[in-house]
Picture (cartoon, one colour):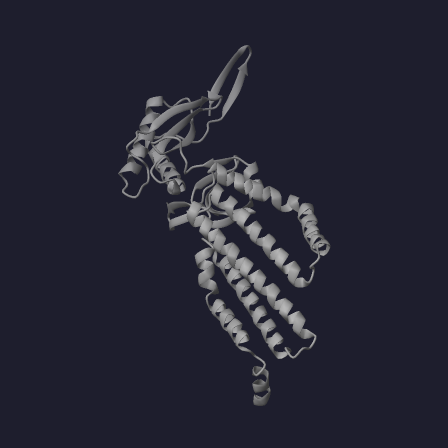
Length: 361
């Protein structure tokens, strides 16, 4: 057994040992490299990239060992050399794409502050330059792989590249709309990483933008505290309310609406809302901006009740749900105290000969 190992090691040259040492070092440094160049990634995505690099290192090591053992001129030598070259090209291209993305994000990205600290997010320019650089690296790597594989003539190389081009053209409906929509979203600056947005109209979703990627956007539901993945094309097709980019210097203006019967005087309704607002403001743990007074308005005079609107400003948009819940609870308690019902009254019409009366129940 020892003699067999010694015999195998005798086939290794200095260049083989150098390649093996470099690959072992890259395997150890795979995670720091991904953490440094990959930006803010989830743990699962980070582990996937790290494992991908290490698998490529293992493949290179296996090919190097195969080449060293069969370097005596057998048929396996040429195949091993080609395999090593192809793997090295793919590995270097992947590293170069990650490094280029990191450089473009650092140079042209946008630095923002959120609850997770400082975050460098992609912008339209950084994403566009990253795509251009990655495409250039991919084309160079593809040409190198074609040359290594032995397709040296122009006709053969053109045939391989043409096949790749036809494949991309046939599948463009699956990836092109998402890439274009992602660039449009970044250019509009409406869905920046760390922003709080509201999606939909019927049952809106309040979410924080976690990451805008090439094909999809990852959101964090601030109510249920879970992640949502939406394709960029689908996200662009629906209304997006960017709550972090409010139009007034006062901050984010919020509204709560209540339907109260006509039998309740306006002064009592306003007094109830004001008292509930003061109770929230006096609470030390609140995010309501008390520098601006509460605005109480009549929104609609319907057939059954008067719809009242309560407008207020909040300090931090990340606490929009907590502020709504606290204020609604305070209004509910105050309404009971004032003897005002928040339930929408029902009406019925009683016809007595030619006289018609309307009663509230």
